[in-house]
Length: 358
Ligand code: KG4
Ligand code: ZN
Image 1 (cartoon, rainbow, N blue to C red):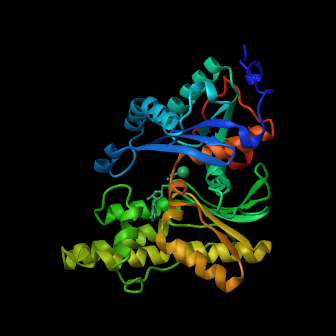
Image 2: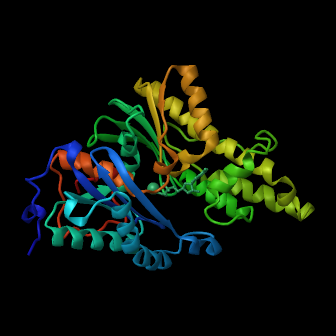
Image 3: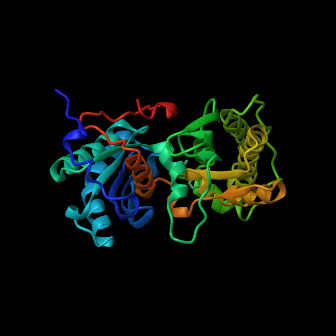
């Protein structure tokens, strides 16, 4: 027996600008809920999980349990801040994947139950596509990219160069062959003894450091693909040797180490982004994903954009790292295309970018 959302009221939806949508994101270690009216965010509430800090990375089972604890208060708080009631909602969007299965299950079960009880449409959103769609959130003043644009999506799990032709037509033209950029930040931070997630800490210490003090070789990867695992190994071997000679080496040189590592990662990303822009001829260039919160990457994109005559787009901080507002805006566009979900869709830990209609 199948439970199609056709049983829900998806034919009575108001127009985009009047549509109130609840969005739920629970793919990794942040439980987030947002309310959007059209492309405007009325509320965006996120509960972070501190519990993983001591383990040096996200522990999937602990993440699922934390989501269970947070999901109801986060949704209630999002409704309250938006001054909305359940009865006002026209649809519910949730992250179907990719991500940690136990974490996704919490958000998807919650979203489905609520959509069923309210008899409103459900929208199944692809997390990486939503990072890109965050650019279409409007506060009434920000500029929004025009199609087609080029987006460098850099998160803890993905590093992708995407040609975005429309909300539903996106093509990955380059990606990492091993670690993601955020993963490289986090793993190198861990090698230096910093807690998880190390990316924002490297960014903070790098502000006081010399980016040219230490040099690490750029990986040689052909085409538009990336590789970051070599850099992680290079830093590991370099530090093992240095610490043998001086046990306090990392502590004494933390700022310069962070600045040099950050400089290397940003250079690797920018080299491929420039190549992608040249290859496609696209001059509208955007950043998305958690690593787009990195201050050096943001500044470098702006400088490079000015030099090369690009129009550049960087999401607001709140919409860079995982958040439900981006799921909401992606959901709004999908609803406009009539792409509602099904009550019997299972969450997908792996979900190929191109197969978001699965
Ligand atoms: O998009 P996101 O919130 O979650 C995933 O979908 O993975 O990205 C999280 C990643 C983590 O690896 C984190 O260390 C990194 O984004 N990150 C940063 C910064 N803020 C978050 N990396 C470098 N500098 C930052 N300021
Ligand atoms: Zn993400």
